[in-house]
Length: 436
Image (cartoon, rainbow, N blue to C red; front, top):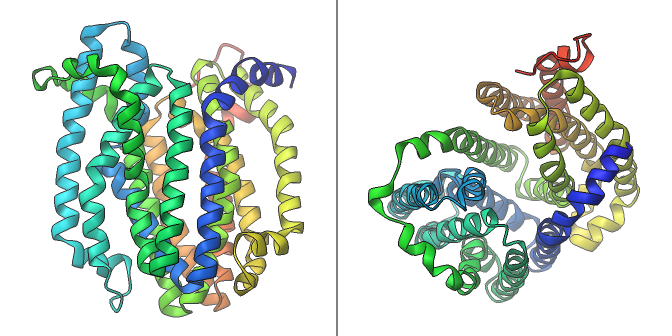
């Protein structure tokens, strides 16, 4: 426990204060303000449609950048003192991302009607919103490219400023659009929000003009693409399949129960995402670098158990407080119309608790680039999430079935994770046994 606290005090808190806390807190506040505006001016039915669009946008944004962000940050940081390798890395990421983004943009623009019919019920025509998304997508890609450079160069202070100003700008425009145009305004705000931040980033990167000259088509490297591919494929798998499972579940609720219930499920999902942002930021900052350093099973087991002993009790108390205050939370973030959401808290919170328990161990997949373990377990989760959701929604004939499925799915996922790492966590290996 002392080791964990010392590490957090000496290393993690510096990073959290410099980047993650500012970014996470501004996103949470912006999300709560937007949710409140949607509840007041649009209602539960509109929230369901907005949820589908958000999932689609998040998925295609990652596809457009080929899931390069984390890999780009790693290699920019690694090669920032090596001009030749840095040039190869930036050139490869830029041109591969450019081609990918243009393809995705054209696909979305010219297939807007088809996409509309997939993510919205056929009697809702928001194809023009998809076209707007296609037009602004390149700005999002440029923004993420710029962010990866600044992050790789450890420009945390400027990233804080960009995130804060960007979130304030985005939420201000979102609130204005929702107030003036209701559901249409809300949908437009979803597709342009992330791209707007590029306007702020553009000003911030002007002092790094020297990097522009290093980006050349002739320096695109296959070896760089190969190095980035594990990060890319893992990011793409999660970014593509999990959002589309959410769209499929939400659409199933709309078709079999109703719009309002789909909106209630989206409301519960949003509340969950707000507190999970805080937890996931700590996991990413502490566990990923720690697991990357660990090479034997005893140290891995000690680290997992130490984290469980110190953080999980705090998390359990926090979730219990959220459950006890659920009535006030729903009213604060949404409105009285959303009071049925209170019935969804128990299984959502239980599912999130198990989810965090499993993610703590599953971070080893990313730390050690355990590619196939990651892909297969994520595929299992995707399949089981959808099938159990359909089963329990039909069984309960109520949206509560979706949160029960969330709990059951993560229980099964956690079971798989424990099976994979069972010998490392519970075995009797010698100290020098290596992790796979």
